[in-house]
Amino acid sequence: MPDGEPRSVPPPAPAGGSAHRLEVEVRADRADEVAAALWARGATGVWEQPGALVAWFAPAASTPSAATLGEVPGVPELATPKQRWSLEPERDWQAEWKRTIHPVQAGRVVVVPSWLADAHEPATGELTLVLDPGRAFGSGHHATTTLCLELLDALEVGGGLAGRTVADIGCGTGVLAIAAARWGAHVTAVDIDPDAVEVTRENAARNGVPLTTGVGSAPAIEGPVDVVVANLVTDVVIDLARALVAATGTTLIVSGIARERRDRALDALQAHGARTVEVRERDGWIAARLVVGADDGARA
Ligand code: SAM
Figure 1 (cartoon, protein in one colour):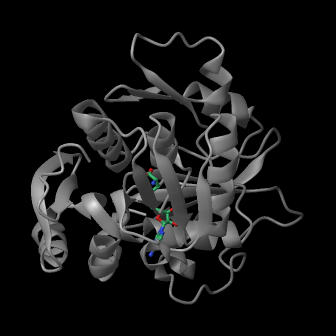
Figure 2: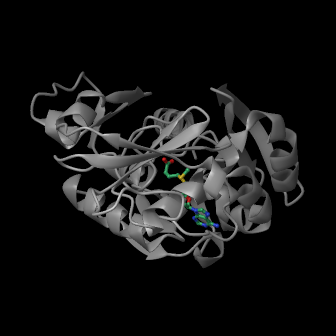
Figure 3: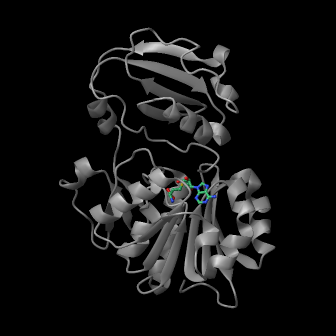
């Protein structure tokens, strides 16, 4: 996940009934790891807010306290003095949460949650994807996702993705892979998180596209493929730089890179032979399009 705001949209909170609410301060680049620890300890919902994560736990016989989570090695944010518990009154969580979710537009792509899909009227030329926010990243609300969708859309406009081979590294919900597949590309989508791969499969079926999916990362791509899109975190982009470039036939789209670490990430990719041709920035995040080989990448 990008090192910041990996879950700008809350996954489903407890459906009905009161819940225990835990708020912990979290730096943006730690949010993913802390969220994973909260899910592993039974959270029924995790919602990222600026500088904090809010998690809900089902009502228990005893009021949660500092001891409830126990010590979580490597996650100092959940240390005893930093836990702030409160009781949330009974509310219709699902209904409240759903009211906060709206369709998102990125280029010609519009991501619509399933409960709004029937009422949604696509504009001419729009590519509508039906995806629900949830445990996997990629509802379309995060800047890194929208930037990647916009760069994919520009590739599609510039030369067409139909018949091209595309790999989505770190597919999350599969949003990028599904968009490319809807434009006619042959897409492989991988993620190191098996849950994300499962979510991607479900979303591909819901959106009526075939995808090749698997648990894995860039080295698993039997490439090179025409287009690689990788919305990861800065450190992972740097660590995977060689494999990302090796997997790329022509065009590499990367995101999840914090603005202040832009040069470090792009230098790592360029050191392996990629050439940066376009950089876009939003909300402190950058996405870049690089080309590999002699082609200028205009047609993917
Ligand atoms: N592609 C989606 C999007 O653009 O919204 C999701 C991107 S999310 C920011 C990053 C995803 O990369 C997560 O699902 C995470 O599990 C996955 N990931 C993290 N490290 C990875 C790695 N080394 N190789 C493959 N996937 C990885």
